[in-house]
Image (cartoon, rainbow, N blue to C red; front, side, top):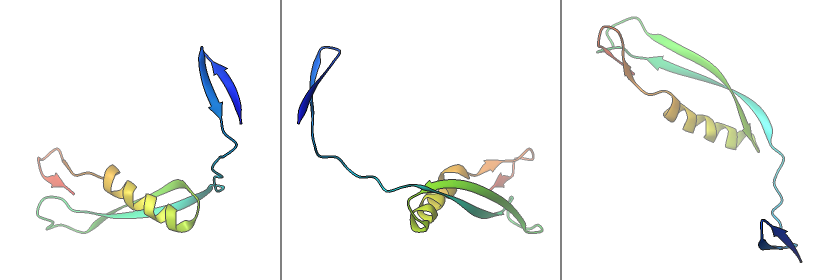
Amino acid sequence: MGQLYLAGLKLKVSKHYYKTLPMKWFAVNCIYQVICGEGKHTPQVNEQTRLIRAEDIKQALSKANLNAVHFNSSFNNCQGDKVI
């Protein structure tokens, strides 16, 4: 164990550290169904390929699911219909 001085602060340096697993890049294909208004129209889909950095495929899919919820919110189109 040692000591380090930074901007007048004394910091302790521990011999303990956390080993991080190597991260990999995954290409995840996300396909969304687009529903406009009451949905009485020809089915439409939006397909996106996203690069996700994760430790394994299970974590990559988990991150993709979180992204799907947060990045694809509903909105109103120019006719005022809600697009989901």
